[in-house]
Structure formats: C-alpha cells, structure tokens
Length: 528
Length: 72
Ligand SMILES: Cc1cc2nc3c(=O)[nH]c(=O)nc-3n(C[C@H](O)[C@H](O)[C@H](O)COP(=O)(O)OP(=O)(O)OC[C@H]3O[C@@H](n4cnc5c(N)ncnc54)[C@H](O)[C@@H]3O)c2cc1C
Image (tube, rainbow over all chains, first blue to last red; front, top):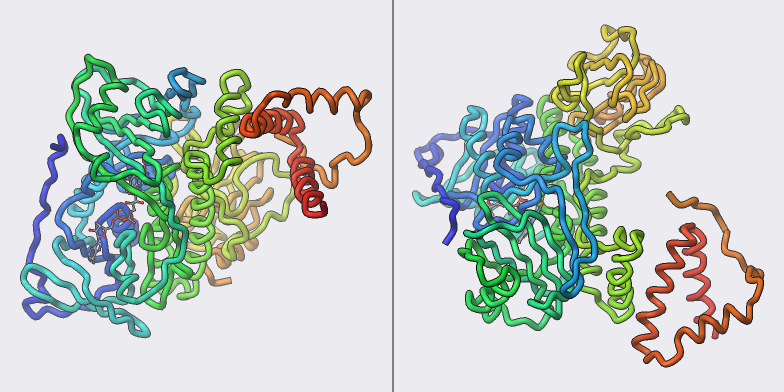
C-alpha cells in the first residue's frame, strides 16, 4: 500500500524492570513531532531526557505535510533541516479554480535572503524518521519504544509515571513530565483535565496517492469542480511523487462509503484524466476540533503540542505550533533545572503559548469558515469573493484556504521589555520572531546560524561594543555596513536587539547600554 | 495599508445626486430573487469595502447598520 517503508525501532527491556532505580530530570511522553524536538533542544542545553512512546514506529500516514520556516529553523539547530528541504518539495506556484475554470495563479516564491523557504512539503513520517535518527545518535536522549504510559502520580516536586511494556510494568520517577502525547493525550485523561473547545461537523477525505504518470507541478485548490461539484478539493504535492488530495465531504457523508477505493478512483479519474496511473498510499476520513487546555503547566506536569491545543488542519498550524511550543519550553525548563531561573519562568510558557494557540485557532477557524461556511450569508460572501477574484485582484487576498503558518506574536509577555525608543521604522519588536538575513563579510552566512542556545545580542555599527560588561553566556553578533540585515532590523549604528533562545525579540534599543541590557535579561529569564 | 482613523463614518449627505444613486442601487436588484439579491449585495459590499479601505469606517458602518436594525 504505502511506498514508505515503516521501520520498527528496537524495543529494549527497560533497566527498571531489572531493579534499577534512577530519578530523571525530564521524562517526555510521546515520540511524535513535539517529543523528539524537545529532547534534542534539551540535550543541546545539557539536559538529558527519556522519551516514552507506546508505538515503535513513525507517524502512520503523511498527516502534517507542511513544515513551516520557523520549524525548519528550529530543526536546523540539530542539523536535520537541510535533509528535510532536500527530500521535500518547496512550493512555488499554484492555481485556484472555480467550477471548471482557473480563477488566478499564485506564486509563493520565497523571499530571497533567508536560509529557509516559507515552507517545505514533507510527510510527517519523514520528519519523524529524521528526528528519531538524530535522537538515537544523541547520548543524552533515551528513546523507549513500546513503553506506554498508563499511570501518572504527580507530587510536589516530581512525578511518578507508570509504564507498560511487553515485559511488564514499571515505575519511573522524574522531576518534570512533559506530555507530548497527542490530541488524545493519556496524561491529560489520567489527570482528568478538561479540554474545552469547538467541534466541527464537516467531514473531509484525505487520499494520498502516488502518481505513476506525470505529476501536476503545482498546488491546486478547487471550489465546486466538475469532479466534486458540491464542495472543495485541495491538491498538495509531497515527496516521492505523492499527492495529497483533500476532498471536503460535507457533514452528512458516509465515511465508509467515501473511503471505498472505487469511489475515490472515480473522482481521481475525473481529476487527472484517462491517461493517469496511480497507487493508493493512505486514506483517511476526518473531522476536527479546535480545543485548548486552560493551563499548560500543572505543577510538575507540562503539556505541549496537540496534547495542549488542537486546531483544524487548514494553515498547517498543528505540527508547526507543536514545534514552537517546545522551542519556547526547552530553554526555560533547562534554566529552571540549572537553577538559573525560578520555577515561575514556566508560567510564561503557559501564557505565551496559550496566546499563540488562540491566534492559531482564530486563523484556522477563519479558514474553516471560508471553506465550509456555516450560514447562508457566510456562503454568499464566500461565493461572491470567489467570483470577483478573476477580475478584481483585491478579492484574491480574501480567499482563505488556509493562511500559511508564520510565527505567532506574543504580545505583552512579562518576559519582554516594551520599546522605549519610538523611532523604529521596521524590524521585529518585542514579542515578535526574529527575521533571518544574510550576514558575514561576503554575505554567505546566515543570521540564524550565528545564534547559540542562549541569549544573543544583535548589534549594528562599525564599532565594537563593550561585551565584557555583559552577563556570561550571552552571545554577541555585530553587523557592520549596509546590508539586508541592517534594513530588516532598521539597524542604524548603535541599534541593539536582545534575542531570546527561541529566536524571539525580548527587547531592543537605539543605544548599547550594558546595565539596561542586564536588567532586560533578568526580566526575560524571570529573575527581574 | 489602509489608514485607520477614528470616528470617521460620514453621517451627512455625500452624494451630488442622491435620488439617482438611490434608484440605481434599487434598480440593480430588480428581477432578482431573494437569493440572487443576497449574492449581488455580497459582491457589491466587498467591492465597496475594498474601495473605502478604511477599516475604522467599515467597522463603524457595520455597527450602524446593525444598531439601526435593532431600533426598528
Ligand atoms: C490529516 C491531518 C493533516 C495534518 N496536516 C498538518 C499540516 O500540514 N501541518 C501541520 O503543521 N500539522 C498538520 N497536522 C497536525 C499534526 O499532525 C499534529 O499537530 C502533530 O502531529 C502534533 O504533534 P505532537 O507531537 O503534539 O503529537 P503526535 O505527533 O500525535 O504524537 C503523539 C505521540 O504520543 C504517543 N502516545 C500517545 N499516547 C501515549 C501513551 N499513553 N504512552 C506513550 N506514548 C503515547 C503516540 O504514539 C505518538 O507518537 C495534520 C493532522 C492530521 C490528522
């Protein structure tokens, strides 16, 4: 069926079953997208972890295929992102159709001057495979497959986890438990925590096929096409000549009937014409929900990724949101464990990432409402937008088939220092993700490559800054001359940005002043 | 990007030939079913909204339209 060969990762009998007892600093439940990324980000900061997963392989089905720039930048720190870009598809063009007619073409040409494109299409099983390989090569990470969490006993300064394996059950003690165990999170259920949100009733059919004849080169979106006249269809290219065809079925569809290969084939035949040949890779009928936990941190138990919040698939915010969560969490947890920051620093993980989840849910709900209007007037505006789009370019911008996942804004975070200077023309302010740019004498390096695992000061101008006065462990990058970096950051001489370990801006000034910077760093680490 | 100004919705006459414009709008709906009227109005609103461009004006107009409905 699938052209991807699912490898089964080796299960080993856990030492605890032979009587070993060792308390761990961090135990992670779930080896999906979030869990392994968190483990790698912790290892980079010297924190060892154990990952428990009930399964012994990667994601079944392609699931998250659209990997956004910010996630690639995170994975690049573990040297896996270039591999993903090489294997995946960097989209450039697409076309939107209404009935049988093309309405307009779009070009998602990446903006030049960034190491990574806005997104790369790559099946989730490849992403996980590359992450798993990297984790297995990392001595600080222990991956335990076929280790299913069945019990959680939270204590005041740690958690006891009950784990089931093919060889029996054992208990694992840990200072911190991070639940990255997906939308049906066992940990959340065991702790009886609510997961409030909204349920959507429209059904969608995902059909992944491998085309054996010529491939359409672009992404396509159809509203009311002749081969599926009542609804919309989305076509995405993935690695290995695989296409994802996403059919909106409406709320009353019979999933079993729709999933039958002959019914799928009939539609595909109309789409691709009499000459096309294909094989089925993966078929799934889904509905979705938008939910968010009220708190992501419950004592020593922390929730991340789909376990903490879940959105509709439009806009690729599920997997990418999960990666942003653990990027935000890793440095904070490492500092708390090293006792260089108070435990309360983790409150900002909850407030910042809840704000991000709200923004993601808002965006994906808007896309959902555009694709599946919920009342007559909503449908009338949607259809009006589509029919105006051919002749009125403004209407193209209103067509919302999923807004590309970009880093969320974290406004008013207690960790950030608001702008004091008011003459900023450009550049990411506090609470915004940094922008990559070419740096170095010949412009051949990238800003993101120069950032270490800690805080970084980015300064502009031709004179050296007195770095000696800075707290230890803070990196410093000075950009001289006139280039893209200077433009993107409105980097007049003296301009200084304080960049957090998760590549968000914590503060910025027009003048380098070591004492002011030290205050901002204390604030950004919860020591203020 | 649109200018975002405040309290900007015009409440006094801004049309040189109000009767002509009013009747042009009404006449454009002639012979349309209710459903077609809705489709027509949606197009018209989107075209005009983009032309106005000022989000504050639009939001004020949305509020005004809704509030005057509740009064009647
Ligand atoms: C059809 C579809 C399309 C999607 N498309 C996109 C997209 O284009 N872009 C995007 O960004 N996102 C997309 N998503 C969402 C994306 O797949 C998820 O958001 C992402 O996988 C979340 O990662 P995670 O690590 O939080 O959870 P998961 O990847 O679900 O990982 C959870 C892990 O926990 C393990 N686990 C669960 N319970 C236990 C237990 N009791 N003990 C031990 N281990 C356990 C599971 O085995 C699993 O490996 C899509 C999802 C679907 C279903």
